[in-house]
Image 1 (cartoon, rainbow, N blue to C red):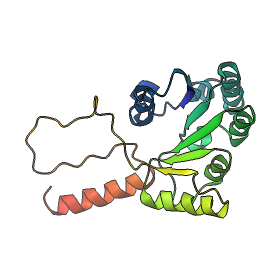
Image 2 (cartoon, one colour):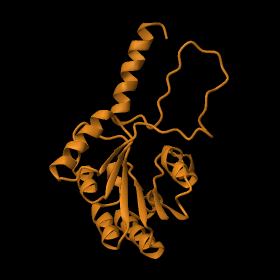
Image 3 (tube, rainbow, N blue to C red):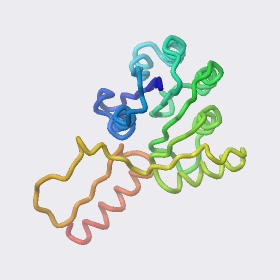
Image 4 (tube, one colour):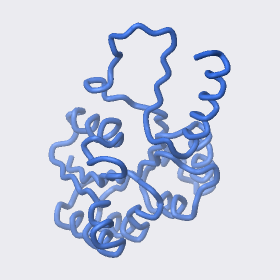
Length: 194
């Protein structure tokens, strides 16, 4: 199976982004991917803007002709447009879009990406899963949603050999619902002397 990975670079280069460890490397190590290409769309966005990014992304897809495009979302202003995703699907590729940190209510771009993807993978909270599950049910597309609240590439992320009483690990960015949870835990754990 040929896979085109649309990789973000929000804080660090794509190989150090959570999407690499939590999705890309798992897919590559599954044995199902026979050929792949990486396309770091945010680089083009930052160099030349959204129109150039979408044009280059579509050209990369047309050149490679993947069976599957894995679209890892980033900040809404820098995402691949839903129109580009629609054109990839029209060309015969299946599009899987990955939602990381979503808002409490779906923003317009999240809904448009949802409607122009074959499947979406929710790497966020259970409430986000239910939000998109309801949208899938409204569109009679019950198998569109995949929920994986967290995955860990264990070759890289593993227990540290340190003595500790309590261990709290949050993978991902400090945005969306994770920011609210981090603030809550900070206050609650501090009150308990942790």
